[in-house]
Length: 301
Image (tube, rainbow, N blue to C red; front, side, top):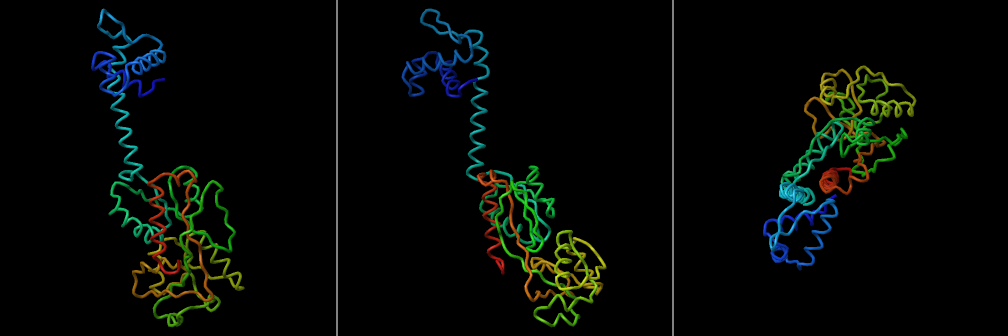
């Protein structure tokens, strides 16, 4: 209803007491002030000033608007400051959803530099596995999600999302350190057909079963868990072996566990996903840049 420029001019007319004084204070001509006040009165639908001799007085509507004008201008100034902070990356919040091994590696590496260079940008971290983590972006529950896909599974990604590839993560096999295969630099999945296995999340389990089927065997899955530390503990105690992403090797905590690459190599694609409009939000674009940089630093990118 109101033009903020007209409110600012009105406020100055009330403060200085005349059109001519307001014109001098604002650097306008007096006719320009007159035109703005006429436009404001048309928007309001009633006169704001009356002349009594050479004096200008506010009407009842003018008095009411005068009481709000300062608050309106203060609110606009505050909004402008906040918008400036967001666009200049002095402030902002980005919600990132990541699967566990990315949350333990890529995310901390990306946020380390962010915290130094842009301390006003806050990141809220969620944990989630695909495909649910992809749906969270579509539902507006997060701004960026880190997810992975396996080439052999032909997985569908919601068409609303933009994919930003980060790295190819080579799959490994976690073995107890005393396992005969642990002495090799790389292992073949077919050579482990007789082992007991520990399976991970639904998507990883599906890929594992697919790769085993391609080699002509059905694995003996003794345990299923998507907790990486639980998997390591089970492997360390000799209760099974596991096919795990290479990112997990960055935080192996058990000395009795060894990771060995698969031969031939098997990989998954790790990517960030966002709604297209979010690419234009400065804080979101900044976090994506830091995630790319973190991914580029890792072996195998």
